[in-house]
Length: 384
Ligand code: KG4
Ligand code: ZN
Image (spheres, rainbow, N blue to C red):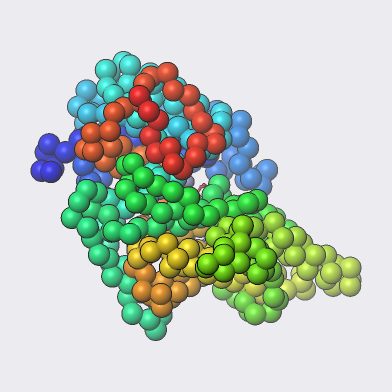
């Protein structure tokens, strides 16, 4: 489709603590404005839904204006508006959905209520992501991108691994706009949540991901052997007879193991400053990266997935990136890791998926849809 006739779509994201407005023309990213309320959650050590919702309300118009200015377009120019309808925090989603409906009604534009998880995969269609050089695993051959000509330009037999403060999922993307299935997910904490909790235990600050990642660089990942959740044979089973949790993760046991480890040092009278926090951080990070990548690669191999896209804030993690690149290369799986600003929650991903839906002729959602905090991944866009 020539760029000039490709659909111009505004995407709105408000499922957690980022207020995102992205504008995409077809597969070209024109603007990606994000305001985060993260600073307001720091003293609580986690996202407070009510604070996030209020911040979305405050940031809605300024961030929208910023995106329109950057793209040099007006609401009138748009072909459609897309908004995250779920999954996510109820109050936060409601602000985005209500605002999107108001804009759609005022500007007379079709509106799409979209699935947040599938939107994370949507960034894969953007020109700058498709043409990015795949990450190389140390000592292994670089994973190659095999692009299919139609319909989305995404690699064929695609999977997506989404790892953030809100989710840990592996998806099979048969067709981005109509056919996505969930292969596995966390049954308790999300990986990013585990990082945040462990950082709190170690007194390392919030958000936990970056601080633990930094601390881990100075530690020994083999110092402690922390559990890899749901890896016992009774959960995993075999390829022929899969266990109930073959492709699922659990991080609550790992978090508890780290807590017990710190408590043992305390009970033994070890002064706080002598507790080996760097070794604990490195060993924790190794357990997270090991179990995420091992299970993701197994799910891909057993479901014929030959290319994997990584998304979510934890995609910034150094060990997750290197171990995933290594294991994907060993398994002959191509890997796409978008730039971090497109991995964390943003409006560009919503706009990108929206543009694909328009191009694919999928009918818009009716204006009376509601935010759905538990929207299943199979529900890619809400039906008209
Ligand atoms: O996608 P995102 O911005 O929003 C949520 O869905 O939460 O992800 C934020 C999460 C936080 O939990 C943060 O601790 C984690 O991503 N994170 C990291 C790193 N950078 C951010 N986790 C591990 N290592 C990092 N370098
Ligand atoms: Zn997300």
